[in-house]
Image (cartoon, rainbow, N blue to C red; front, side, top):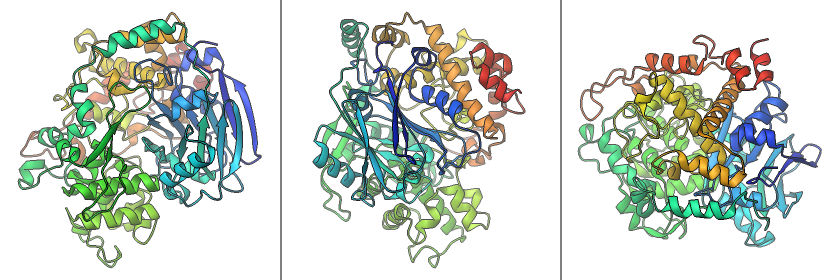
Length: 618
């Protein structure tokens, strides 16, 4: 087995209460690396098309990569995968923190669950020994309480990934959480809840083997000293450093994507990172991270009460509950984020859903009689917090909103769908495609639509406020579609390796990735091989959706998101994204069919995906 891997996968049948170890095949690892690469390979092979996402046949996986739990710079990430109940297609959610590293220390590279338990359970893995345990005493507890209870029972050195009451109640926008980080998107908390799996707890002292430990440490020291660009802001401020430039530059959505920041609302002052620092208790970092962009807050002593140690909201949470709702009450945003964390809700989807409800209220589609007496108006921070809690509890009008904007619009009717900002059910994050054009293709075309940390970081639009720079020279390719293909493919490899993108984006070139990969695994790996591996992963995830009957070319993109009609003032004035041309260029480069969105049979065979080619092209 290659270094960088523990070499074992655990398969858990919850219906039969059976656990089985399998060796991790080295060929599988080299072809798909880890994370959602291996996850997609296993789900495509072992899961039939058309399964109910909340039924027993949907396979739920927790996976690491070869960098996870090693000294490779920012090898902090793990991925949760399953068929998404939110989109009906491929679902994955990526998270940092410590859980991924400790899953490997506990003796496994990945864990997969199928079936449904008769009663609430949690999985405990301790130094290579795994068992299902009763979780009756945890059911109904929030994520913070769950982790505290498990640490008191199993030891402080245990790491936990769990769901809160929202996942138990099968909210389609529920998430899987640790205290420090969240695997938020795709609604995978609901999959976990449907299986009556409350938590996965891991502890252990196994060491991840490295091909050349001294080389890995030397590379870490070398490249850590070279990290620059956005790292200068991330270290002291975290992702909230994006909030002010995001509004000023047109990256952040305003008023449910209908407004133009300071132009439409000159008296509105968005929340800046410095304001949050005044309320911050201390910083924290994910496993061996050289940045430490997380933060814990001081106790809330104003109108909103929250405990000392509550997580500081990240940029996405601040933008979705802030500018997108025209809310600049800082403590209300911290409180809304804390509600999402404790109940186990994706804060991007939750904030987007609250903004949707406010616009429906403004347009007269719903009234106080519908909203339990809550006056859902722009900037009404009390209403925003109150409705967020109802959404998290699936209580009152919150039950209408608990599954996100698409489901809520269907329940409300009256044309509410025109205010539901989503693609294939997934609410859009706080980055405007009119500001960075590459989002227009990734939001629609990635197998997990409506996502911002997917696809290529190459941008042919205005500069991103973070100062991120492309790793590939656009001029070196035949066209923009080819540039996106190359950038996307390398991105897939980095994510599946378990590296945090904030560090990857700070590298001046892609060389550190190949150097770390070779030193960790012992493979004599090249840039070209990693690009081919990323392309294999992209095509397999695409094939999963095709097999589920989904065609991304038919996904509806909200017109206001791509500038139809274009804004008349501000930084995005006159911009309409030429999405058709971008799609044609990208599909041509990827060799995907412009009617069916299928990868070509020839391309699949070139990528050694012969079984996938047979499934799509019988």
